[in-house]
Length: 84
Image 1 (cartoon, rainbow, N blue to C red):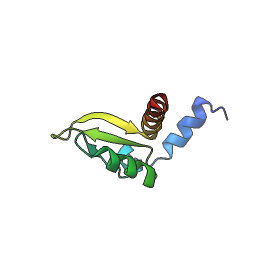
Image 2 (image 1 turned 45 degrees about the vertical axis):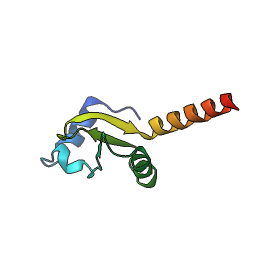
Image 3 (image 1 turned 135 degrees about the vertical axis):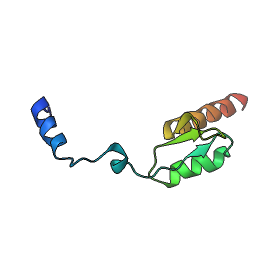
């Protein structure tokens, strides 16, 4: 569906002063030092498709995604096949 600027503006006018934080779902955050297996389990067992990764000070340092997990698994699989 192609929306016009006016249609988008009309929808935005109906937000009743909501801010971005009102629309966010509470997300899990993992630390750089979190066990990779635990991070993957959290991604696969929840609705989350990506997790913010923070350092010891809580500063965002990256994001781990389900795609990262799949690519890493494929890389490991291919490496194991080459050894065999």
